[in-house]
Every structure is written in structure tokens, then in C-alpha cells.
Image 1 (cartoon, rainbow, N blue to C red):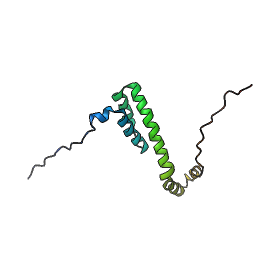
Image 2 (image 1 turned 120 degrees about the horizontal axis):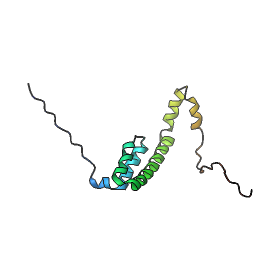
Image 3 (image 1 turned 60 degrees about the vertical axis):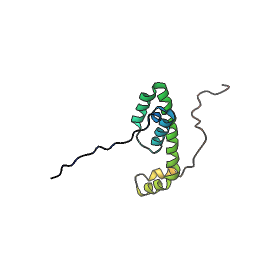
Image 4 (image 1 turned 90 degrees about the vertical axis):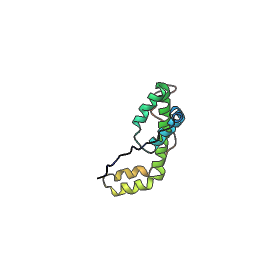
Length: 118
């Protein structure tokens, strides 16, 4: 009977320069958000690695970039797949009306709170 030895697997870590660079971390976080991955731990780690103010700036920029990429992916590349999937599901058929709406690029007007001249 032979003894079975388990050999540990070494996973290469990111270089120290990559972790200390806010730009690299911002790109990694934006990529994860853009793909729709849960990035809560990375958000908390940004505060631990870069401090409060700098960490918040990194997270806000990365979230904005990632959500823009995710919106573009869902609106263009995944659109046909999503329409087919919603068409098969009778309960979600009302969502198909939303896919027919054109993209409006005008900024959100919001409610008017103050009126000039009166």
C-alpha cells in the first residue's frame, strides 16, 4: 500500500506594486463590477489598503466605470439573449416593453422646486 502525499498548490499573488497602485486596483474593481461579480470584499479592502479618503475615491471611480461597462454590455451584447429569455417566460413578458424603449441620453431633469419670477 503506497502512501499518498498531498502537495500544496502555490497560487501566485499579485505583485506588491500592483496592490499599492490605486490605478491597478481601480481597474480590477471596475472589471469585477463590469462583469457583475460581487465585489463587496474588494470595496472593504480598498479602505484598508489605501485609507479612508483615498479608498473612497478609488471605489467611487471604479464603481462608476464598472457600472457603465455593465450597462453597455447588458444594453448591447446581451440584449438579444435577454429578449429571447423574457419572451419564453410568461410572467416576465411585461419587461419586454422596456426593451423596446429607445435610449435617452438627455440628463435627468428632476422636479422643479424653484420657479423664476414668481
